[in-house]
View 1 (cartoon, rainbow, N blue to C red):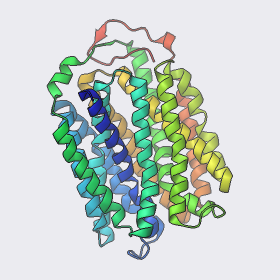
View 2 (cartoon, rainbow, N blue to C red; view 1 turned 90 degrees about the horizontal axis):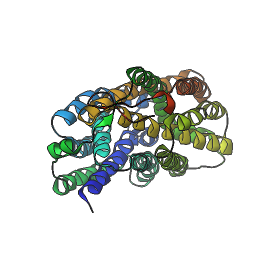
View 3 (cartoon, rainbow, N blue to C red; view 1 turned 30 degrees about the vertical axis):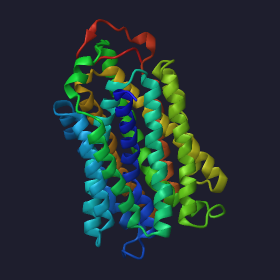
View 4 (cartoon, rainbow, N blue to C red; view 1 turned 90 degrees about the vertical axis):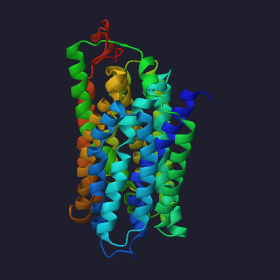
Length: 401
């Protein structure tokens, strides 16, 4: 195996761990009733600090990745998130639980700005590798529901944190042994990109900002609430936490399929041609999910996950095509600061609307509004004919969209 493929392999594994560990708690909380006296909404609200740290930690992580070492930062990610997850399993009070969840979010913040830039600097086929990387992240979300529910049911919720945490630390040790730090060498190999007209670049930045904010709310609220939504609405299909986890995981397979499909299309078509129809899918699926149950809810959730996770691949392609390597980690950091920052607001919104605001029907109608905003932003994204690449530049740059 070449060094580049080994690096991409670890980046993919890290993506899976990142999303899985952040979402262990929303499923594990279903089994915490005997350990804590708080309600579902009150316990879920303890994870707000995790989502805040997930966003706020992106900027320092991106800066360190660009200025120090992306490889070393990814090693810190593996070992740090593993240790924080084990500590969460040891929590004896709501306060300790909130602190440990915040630590998970802080270490999880490292992955996206650092991992995305590492992948971009080692890949030779962008769309394909972005799609595969997205599948790994999607599998992490699926495993969060499936494995957490199964482990919590048979071993207890604490082991749902202990076991993954220990495996992440082992992965970090293997990464340090198998991947040398080639920070300087990779920068020397970075290929210059064709410049993009300033007006087009600013338009892309505005669209990406709007999609990141609106899409971040939808992504976070949907992935956090789906286990509880299924446990309430799929009464004719499930009878245990493990069964809920299995169906949530099955729905996330649609997201994995989307990222493979969209990744392949990115290598062959303009981003706008893919972006607009994909964005149009979000709002209708959220509207149906607001009131549907059983098979109708499953189909709507599958369509939503296809749109949401396919959009992640589109957003990552925008970053790679419009930024130079030397500051790509910071570009990713800015994007994920916005995305995970609004995600922090989505968690209390889920808790509040579930317990006091009309339940999941109200929540998903609100999310449908955010989904429509994503579609409106997509309509303003420039087509290939609007970008006229000039000479290579070290600043904001990229291929035609």
